[in-house]
Image: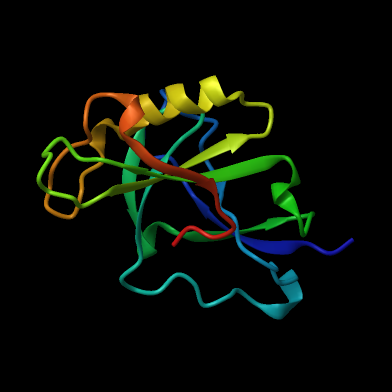
Amino acid sequence: MPNFWYPTVNCKTPDPDCVFGRPTFLPYPNPPEISEGQPDWPKLDWKAFLVCQWCEQGYDYHQDDIDWGAAPLADLWVQNHMFCAELKCDQGNCGLPIKLHIFASRSKTPKDVARILLAGSQNARCAAGHKPAPVLPDVLTLKNVALVE
């Protein structure tokens, strides 16, 4: 049975507060077999705000935070979701969204995802440096994604 390459990150919450978020697999469309070598992803300027489903904390991640790990399933995401959420910032006239990603197993309910989103968004900022609006109804979009862009 072949193994497949998947990008991973390690949750940045210090030990021992989050041991299950190490590693966290990220979605990757059509993962190559290990024999094919690691993909050239992400680009040097890649940045994403990721929220850990285990400790519910979010942090900025960059290209150098990505490791590649092996998984025995080409479709690792049958059991999991990576949601991308866009929030409004707390400056009403700014208009720049705050984009964050939330990893969640399919067993998580919408209420669970909302709780994780609310807890994990506290460190997120828009491009102008504003924090998220304080209420959850200010979610602009929430969608399942196949790649963290």
